[in-house]
Picture (cartoon, rainbow, N blue to C red):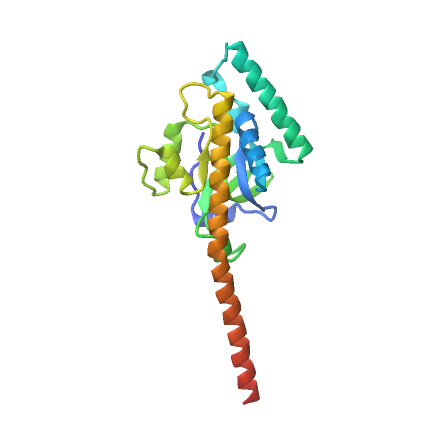
Length: 230
């Protein structure tokens, strides 16, 4: 079930002292989730991978693969991704389940220019994860549409493009057929590229803000010294 977005007050109420700040939260520690986390790691982007309820309980909609070649490829890719995650100490938390998701601003935690106007909060039993980006690996598109519309955002025909604009990414979601290993890797690379690009743009936007704040501080100190001298 896709969690409903929380209001600012509601989000603040469930934010405990154990909140963590990261660049990206990947919900789903299966093949797609590990592929994204690995690509982000190769690009130097920090991420935390948690489990989703949907991945723990796939239910009757789970796709059964009968193609032995495809199944063998997926098994081998999963083995390689797990080895990469282990050797590079990726933050994979299979025992941690994402229980809630909301878009909020946390200017009380860090200055607004640093965090930006919107942040994502992923609630777990162990606390809250704050991130610039969230990657979903398994959610029904109809629930995603309702979720985004409840945020007051307009959706066109390309739901993935609309979600990317707010820092929410889908991999292997909404496909009629189970994506091939090559398609999963392709999507993971695209998501990684998009997150890295957005991060670079945010950093460029923050630099002038920091400069103006520093200049204002120096100017204020000079005026204060002048007043004391007078």
